[in-house]
Image 1 (cartoon, rainbow, N blue to C red):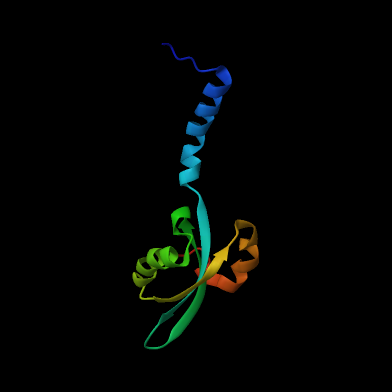
Image 2: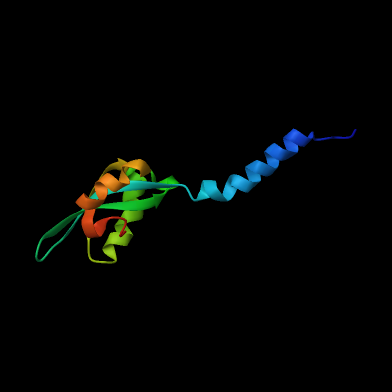
Length: 100
């Protein structure tokens, strides 16, 4: 028994393999609130996370050590922003726009 693969199928397979690296680079953007104590400081920020972290629980797990490294404590993940909405959120996040 011989197997043959048609040229369109070869092209589809090749395209799927070519796009695989881009799929692993997908990202989402989480809005969050964090704090520091002594003295109390609060901030709102937006962080870029990998696509696998696009749930509130996964985002919190990814953000907690990033923030902790600079002495911040994550208060909450507020939600997620589409890439097209980022520019409108940049001013609100200020220095914490894509910092963590």
